[in-house]
Image (cartoon, rainbow, N blue to C red; front, side, top):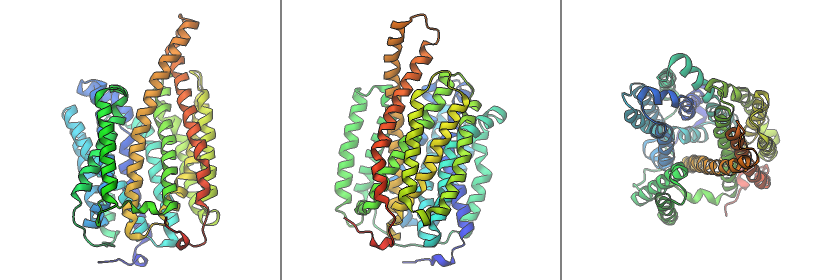
Length: 480
């Protein structure tokens, strides 16, 4: 077993390698969203086909996430990170060279597999390589890339698509990817913290089947219908496969994904809180662009600009929180963050077609500031109690749950929005059938219902922040 001394690891070069790679991987999740109409026109296809350039990418990131811990132990996290950065950069180039919608979707799926490996791997490298006293600041910088990329993505995507064409969304990854590869290969140390395990075939099959089933069902359930035979079949298959996966992983001596990390109660609570933060973040980044473009009929660039001030505020507050974390601790920071998210979400339940740019931008900014307050403290509070040799598995679980929750949130929010919009349309028709803005008003009311539900979820989880009370010694953390 080869254990690298973290005291020898150069802090800033490693952080740069991690930052660029993580930012690049997450950025590609959101930049393409605003380019879908352009892709439809270029490839002469419909929305349902083009949407798979987004859906396929997201499915791939979620399906691959559970096996990152095994791959990292097998190849070493340095090699895994460098290889996937090379793959991500290569497939970005191929996406730009796509000759039809089918080839673009294929390359996006392969790009998504690499992205799904990069995200948990970067977090693992921080907790396994960076010195303990510097990990809080390091994870705050990691959080900047993790949160800034999806928030800034629509703005950047709108600008690049409008002025340089859709291919620029992929070609811009090349210089960043090459820089990240060079820095990672040069400065991230080669190390192994655990022995090479035998391949857990049963765990691999069950986790892939369960992940794929849930992600496809949640992503397409709204268009298929939640009571459609395909949706029900996939949900049942997912539940059975997940149950078999958990049963097997808790009994085998060399699991593919070590679920025993849930014995650490603080980590378990942090995963739950991360799911709530994810639900809140996905609700805003999904619904607000839809509201801006479908209800207010604004451009993709205008929609991106709504998110820009909050994105900049999120960076500043994330860096600030990284500085004060050691003095304040995770409990109060995450409490303030969740409360801010709840307040901003509550304000979004009063949207109308006349809601101003300032109103949308202000409360999106408050939500992003709340995310900055809670995201890093919650992550660090949970990961800091995990032994170094299990940190790869813990970060894989974090990423896995985030992807499943993301797909679940978008699917459920879409279904609720469609259902409530239909109900409100009938109500408004009954009041005034000649209303020229009937659809816009009905959709606004439907979004208000979704944001009300999200507010309730956020409020119910506020008490969990008190489980992250600062401990004098992490060693005092006990397992169940």
